[in-house]
Image 1 (cartoon, rainbow, N blue to C red):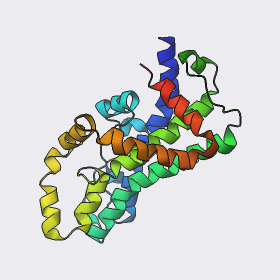
Image 2 (cartoon, one colour):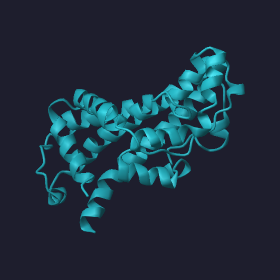
Image 3 (cartoon, rainbow, N blue to C red):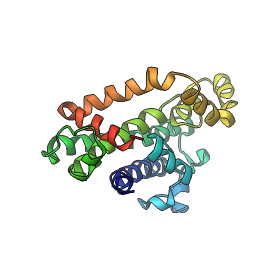
Image 4 (cartoon, rainbow, N blue to C red):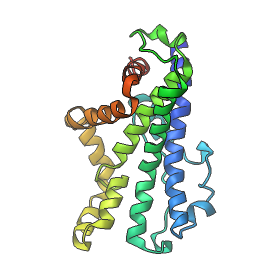
Amino acid sequence: MHDFLLKLSIMLVPALLAVTFHEVAHGYAAERCGDPTARLLGRLTLNPLRHLDPIGTLALLLLGFGWARAVPVNPGNLRRSRHDMVLVALAGPGANLALAIFCALCLRFGAPMAQPLPADGHALAFAEPISLMAAFGLYINVILALFNLLPIPPLDGGRVLLNVLPARLAAGLQRIEPFGLLLIVFLIFGTSLWQAFFAPLVMRVVALLAGPYLQVVVHTVQLLFAR
């Protein structure tokens, strides 16, 4: 129980910030492009309780990826519907990338005490919490940015494709949207796509941002997700 509470205290704030900033970024981009729907519904707030999906948050903490309640966007209010929807879709992953860079800077310059951690659960009790939170924040934001860019609706990458493809191809892609989440679950758990492609890509981006502190991120993730 003690280790669980320590892990939760390290993971909770970065995870909540990651999903909250992602959704607020969508709403803010839509507002800038002419759609006030998110603001009128009270979703342009950094209060995570307005954005959380219970199952998505639990998945984020247990599996390393998850989701929040999508911020509503009315394409009819956008000044340039297809063009602006691309900007709105990219705003969420862009916010996660910005948070990942911020966490990387915290590791590089704001947490000089960060050192590679021994691979045992008790290390959490003695390690610097800010370093661990920054390491996890870097990791989780890279995952959310890349995961949401997968070209499958209703993910943000799918939204981008729907608005850049010719109308006939976009209509075909839109037909799979009702089954998009099932397809994503199948690709993650029913194929080797995650281990063969996605996980290595995540670690390449994490390594690029973390630089000499990559091992801090690796050991932190191993400790937090150790069963």
